[in-house]
Image 1 (cartoon, rainbow, N blue to C red):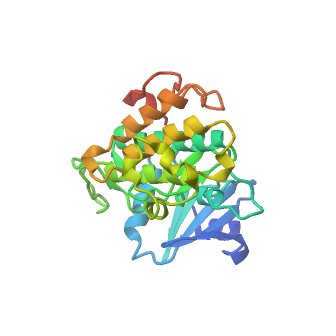
Image 2 (image 1 turned 120 degrees about the horizontal axis):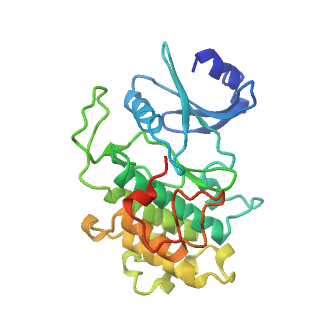
Length: 295
């Protein structure tokens, strides 16, 4: 995209249009003349954050998936480096998990939908897409929610890869041996979905890794909005999944595909795609690699 297009869309990068500030840039809400809403990230320092910029283009520009935020375009002009995404009307998941007193909270069905969507997206990144991407920065800050509370993974600036056989002329390819850090971070996200607290905060009061056998030990920490709604058994089940993910040794953790299979075995039938899409059949008892593809 041309610089003047994104400049005009944000009213010259007006502070009134700023919707968030991250480590590498400021995010603005923008609007094109045709009425499209955009999320526009203007990087602070184009040289320092060159790799992050190239990774976003390389990954988000190449792949499309239901649970990955769409990159619509980018701008390179002089010292400016700008990334343009589809606007997500419900913002960051963190906003919903740590609401102000006047804000509404997420209901249990919404939380399960979000957990399934993030697991689906990570499974696809790890096991299906040709680069086999490991995100390495999963948190409630990088999960965006669209108008239907469908989660979208964002912020791929720390990503690495599981496939060392792909040639790279842009010096963006760094490799890891497995995706188990993403699994741990996903488990931490599940605990935050359940309690509204980060894993670090919970660990001050509970021995998280010993909860698998008796998840009721953490029940007092569950978000009060979930208590008394008839979902106690489901909450305990999700705690068990989270505990498997945050085991201290990586080889004790399941893969993301195994985590996703665990979850759809329990919640898949109830949480079919709201738009009727059959690209992923959630009524099956387990998901094969082919069934998590959604381009």
